[in-house]
Image (cartoon, rainbow, N blue to C red; front, side, top):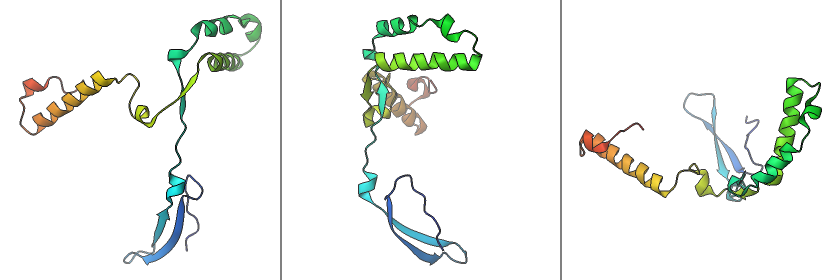
Amino acid sequence: MLDLILTNKEGLVGDIKLKGSLGCSDHEMVEFRILRAARRVHSKLTTLDFRRADFGLFRDLLGGVPWNKALEGRGAQDSWLIFKGHLLQAQERCSPTKRKSSKSTKRPPWMNKVLLGKVKQKKEAYRGWKQGQVERENVGPLRN
């Protein structure tokens, strides 16, 4: 008897059926359908856009805090929490957020078209070397 099916989204799984045991096993096969409507939820992942950040305001906000008075008589943990709170508040005010597209989440932001082309060229050369079509000297360093 099936007790529980776990998913990360409500309504993701439907039409659950038990199909009998597989061979001599005492476990039963489960057939289910993944519902498309629940699966097509787009993530709205945002990240801080430091290229458009106002670092002058950031410096002023953190520089304007009387740190000696704010941290006086506190332990390391309390001091860290106070500093972290001020830092996150200043960061929120000075750094706008931007939406990450699915394309940019697949690769690091520093990976531009030039580097992508070089990585592709290196992969093709390595593949040719593995198949014996290219000499080792023409491939260049393989593990950089």
